[in-house]
Image 1 (cartoon, rainbow, N blue to C red):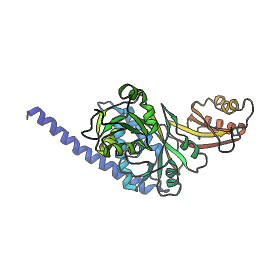
Image 2 (image 1 turned 180 degrees about the horizontal axis):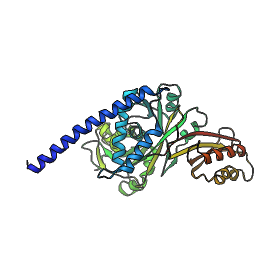
Image 3 (image 1 turned 120 degrees about the vertical axis):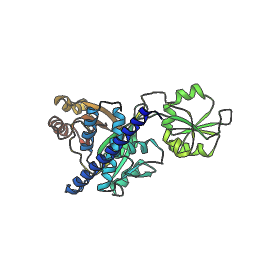
Image 4 (image 1 turned 90 degrees about the vertical axis):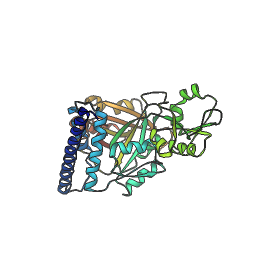
Length: 356
């Protein structure tokens, strides 16, 4: 070993010792803050968002902002666990992108529970069995997740946060399996098959595509049957012991899924927030224009407008809207007050920090 290499490693050892001491000091302060909280609330989404944004602004590299965010999310996760255990339900099974989104938001210290449906995620949080839930709400390629949107208006839960997760699909096969005529099926969730259809058309036009309930289920099927290949993420490959035959096979490299964090608490302003609401109007000329006018009048920007059939009657619709700002911001509050006069129904689903 060269003398220069030895000196550099000694410097790293010294820095590691300092980091360990500093992280434990941070954990100790977090514990003190936990004792001072009067309402017992452990998760403060607005505070954590502010911490991550400040660190990103102060980051001079060589670590990327994404790496810094991941690192300090895990630090906050471990510090949070010293205050109290936190549990999160997600649309399972294990190895899905929804689990990956839950880890991205809450870190490894939060206890995760895989459930079989979006409805069950809502029920788990509503009943108090878990603290929070993570559900998919839209994909940049395939659009909205209807079941999540349908459950939000009737639930008492609030949207407490969002997670934006780039989706990079892999083609997974059982170790030793070969595309020499023995692999006869590609199995995956219907959305994953749709997101990779052009790649499949070019590379495997004659192999059957079989939809299953989740990509994780497809990966498990491929792990047990060398005649099947699966479309899933790298985490599923590790979980089920599969080989990655091809990386990033999605047709759109910008393919991203947005997830919502649902819970029972209101989130305070962070300074960079989004508000989600659902609204409806009577069936009359100009009704939709009247719904949107309060936002224009108060200079509130819309980031999303989505219509869904209403459960109240045939050919009636509700509108889901995301706007910039927190519901307590003056201009947002003014727009919401005007909206209540113009709409037949309006419900604020939650204000929360924009995904970091």
